[in-house]
Each structure stands twice: as C-alpha cells, then as structure tokens.
Length: 345
Image (cartoon, rainbow, N blue to C red; front, side, top):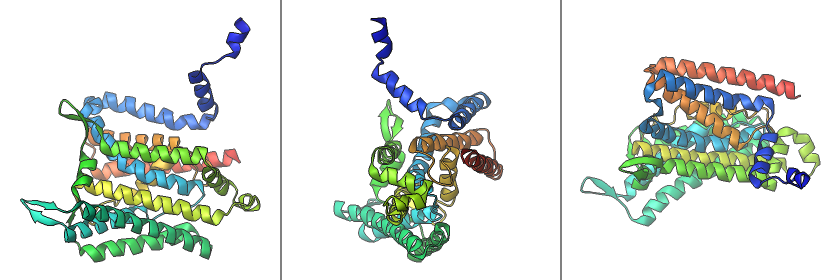
C-alpha cells in the first residue's frame, strides 16, 4: 500500500517536477537576481510595493513584454531584429495619420465610425507584417546577416514615419487610450491594466507555439544547428522569415499600445524600445547564439528590467544616471550570456 502511494504523484507535483527538472543551474540566476532586486528596492524605497507603483510598473512592462515576445522568436533562430523600435514608431504614426484624416472633431474630441477605427488599427498592423516579411525575405535571399538588413529596414520605417507626420503629433483612436491607461478596477483603483492582459495573452500564445507546436520545434532547431536542420528537411529560410514577421507584428502592436498610453504619437516615442527589448530577452537567460531560451525566461527578463527601472526612478535617480546603470546591467548580462554559451559547448 505504501509502495503504491510512493509511486503515485499528484498532477500538481508531477507538473512541478517537469518544470523544475528542465531548469539548469544557470537558469536560476535570472530568477534570483529578480528576487534580490525586489527585496532591495522594497527596503530602499518604502513606496515600491504600493498598489499604484505596481500598476505603473505593470503598464510600463506590458509594452516591453509584447515587443520582447517577438524578439524571443528572432533570437532563438540566432538572428536579430534591429528595426523593432522604428517599426513600432511607424505603426503608431501610420495609425495616427489615418485617424487624423478619417475622424471628425466634435465637442473637443475626435469621433470616427467603427470601420474607420478598425482600418486605423488593421492597416498599420498589416504594414508592420509586410516590413517583417520583407526583412526576412531579403535576409534569406541575400544571405546577409539579419542585423544589416534590419538596420536598413530601421531607416526605411523611421524615414516613412517622419515623412507622413512631418514632425507633428497625431491623436490615436480612443480604444488604444483605453487599453493603454485603463483596466479592471476595484473601488475606483485599477488593479489589472488591460495592456497587461493583452501582453499576457501574447506571451501565452508565444509560449504555446514554442513549446507545443512543430513550428516551435523548428525554431529551436534552426537556431541550434541550422545545417543539421536543413539536412533534416526543415526549410530554415521560411522559419527565419516567419520569426522576423512575428517580431515586426509584436513591435507594431507594442507601438500602438504605447501610443495609446500617451494618447497621441510623436517621433520621439519608442527610442529605447530596441535595446530594452533585447535587454529583457537576454536578462531572462535566452542565448544570443540561438537555440536556447523560452518565453518564460523572457517574462523573468521583462520583470527584472521593469523592476530595475521603476526602482531607480523611485530612488530619485536622474535619467542620465539611470541609463548608465541600465547599460552596465545589460553589458553584464551580455558577457554572462556569452560565458554560459561557451560552457554549454
């Protein structure tokens, strides 16, 4: 009887063992770093654990999480997308430009039909998708490094944003402002922002795709050993194109949500989005050399980056010093990433 009990495990315990069993010692470091930062800022800044602070941190991290989710796909294939920041900017500017032309000013507010609003959201997202497919197709077709092609796409999307806006600020549809600034409320206080719910949905879909689909397995194989993947019959070029397209779509979505948070779009938005997204993925433990990482690790990276940023702000660290600290942290993460990659080999 006791022997049978010993062999029988509850589903919760089996799930825990499966999750923990896949973790290696180096995977614990990002989680430990996150926990240490939370403890430190909780002591150094008494207001760190206030509800308002937590909600603000969640809203800041939501846009990063959406963009970092797409970047995870790209880095897992041993590629990189330098255009996420400007694709996000272009998508938001295109949305604002369309809305400014189709909406009608009345009572101090812009009003538009539902199909005009839908077009203001769908057309910019389609343009982001096309930019991603273009970047991937040229990368695969030319056999040039993705960072060179995405650098060109970065200038193209940035130039397009400047061309249509002419330096002006544009309003965005009200639905984006609602998603970016509101959420589920309790006693008049937002406790779960809509942007966080959207980011969680994006991350969950990304996790399911990477963990449980054939495409996800192909992504890991393409990044882990591209030559072996080709010999196994995997069309690695299509995988790279698809991942760069995913990255562009999530960048576009992040750009729209960020514009919604600001209620308008200007050319100075999303300037730090590229480095922040890469930092989040790398801080979580995903390898820059491909084939190693997961969406769960990216969640840890986003949380770490956001906690560090919010914590330094609450400690009244000025923007210049805060950027310096963030740069040092990113450099340390990159060096550690490279060292861990060597030990795995």
